[in-house]
Length: 448
Image 1 (cartoon, helix red, strand yellow):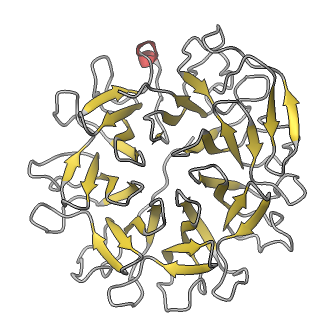
Image 2 (cartoon, rainbow, N blue to C red):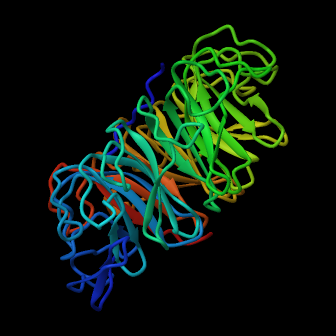
């Protein structure tokens, strides 16, 4: 299976704030520095992964995801000082409200205590009510789980965590291992990749498949299904699900997901319509042929499911050839694919572009790149960029003074307002005192 691992690595208010635990307990913490103060000279940049006293967490924080319609951010962190009593010494999942500065521990036991295993790969619904994540902890639900990695969902209104990766008869499957998880914007469906034998009734590929769990009906559907209903013939992953759960984008090395057999075992990006049961391949040349290169992966989809972005090593997805690793955008209705990771003058740069994210309405795309796309940037240093699709305007996510910092990029996510969430090893605010550890930042960018 093609490796999909990526290096992952402020809320600021002027009055007393509280840290809200997911089970409803409120813990008062000291006030943080005011916006624009000496602690944060860049008021549009906020350190998300910070302790109650405003300093950076004492461990790495990575894999952030931002809600489309509410001020919530989820991320995973090895830090032990983001909330009180986090003493398990393991990576946990947290939810942060970037307007009022509250942070909540998401991966907790039913009594509010810490998990006894790691938790990661979180995502959040549009309204912030539901949070999904992967964990190998055994004490997150009553009765416990097997210790394998499962997908979980927390309802923040009830405070109850449930298991998503259940067998077809509703039991916890002891042989299941979950890898990635995403939730639809309306909070009704969960897409996940997993290895397991009995998550659905039909025959499946004995490897990693992509599924969708309907939280309202408690049913699971196989997404990475072979054409005609049989099992896929190779691994699938990196699911992204649209707002109402109808469309799922994913990447796969399988050759038999569409009517036309793909002769290569390299990843392509696919789109599955769960209403019609039809899967279409997204990554094709203008003439409809299999592209060259080492494949395409890591899709992200809009709310209506009609646009998606992805990374690609192929040089022939466009009429004009490209080179290197690029971020592309595909319009499902027109079939058109366009290059996003280009220089401000429209030319393709030398360098790689990774980790694309598209806003729910398709207006903005964020990505990371080691290429010099804007004046003042330096090749082979990672930066976070935001591209506006209607104007083709490319913006650097950081302030001009931050161009000197190295290792800026990682895990970029853009919301409907065009603000960007990312992780970085650079010390971008005065309160970032944890050295080389990754931190999570939120940059508010004015809508243009």
